[in-house]
Length: 250
Ligand code: ADP
Ligand code: MG
Image (cartoon, rainbow, N blue to C red; front, side, top):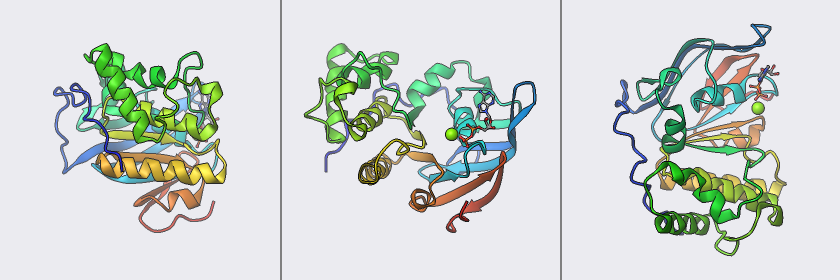
C-alpha cells in the first residue's frame, strides 16, 4: 500500500472555527433551495449533522435534490433558506468560498471534469495553484498522488488517451491535491462499468480511511450506499430516512 504525501501546508485553514459539537463537520437545519423563482423546490427543509471521519451515502431517485445538496455543502451555490455550517462557520457567508473549496474540500464528479488540454500531472496540480507550493513541490506531490491511485505509468497522458476508470483516478488524485478533510463525491461511478465501479469505490473508501477524511457520497445505487456507515435517503427535496440500516429500495 502506498501512503500519500503530507497535505499541502495551507490545507487546514486557521480561520475556520472548531466545530461547536463534538467533531461536527457539517450541520444543516431547515435547508431549502428553490430554482426558477420558486417554481422548483429542490430542497424543502433538510436537517442533518455529519461528524468528522464519517462515510455518509446520500441516496434517492433522480431529481430528489442530491446534487443540489452537495453543491450547498461545497459552496458552489447558495441556499434559499435555512442554515448550513462547516465546522461552525456559515457556508453561505464564507468570505472566500473559492479558498474553502480549494483547501477544505475535494470534489469527485460523475463526468470527471478533467481539463482536456492538460495532462494527468497538470490536472492534478491545478488546485495547488491556490497554495504556496513551489513548482517542484507541485510536481512531486502530483506524481505521488497519481502513484497512490495506481497511475504512475500515465503521468503525461491526456484525458482523451485514458479509460473512464483512469480518468476518474486522475480526478480522485486531483481531489486530494491540497489534503482536504472532506470528500464530496457525486455519482462518482455513474459513468463506469461494473469492474471499474468496484475498483474506484474501493479506492475512494481506502483513501478516506487512510486520510481520516469525511466522505459524503451521492448515489442512486443502493448497492453502493450499503458500503457507507450511514445512509441518508432523500425524496422530493426532503430526508425520509437517516441511519445505518440498509436503505429502502427506491
Ligand atoms: P438529483 O441530483 O437528486 O438528481 P438535483 O439536485 O440535480 O437532483 O435536482 C433537484 C431538482 O432541482 C430537480 O427537479 C432538478 O430539475 C432541479 N434543478 C437542479 N438544478 C437546477 C437549476 N440550475 N435550475 C433549475 N432547476 C434545477
Ligand atoms: Mg444529481
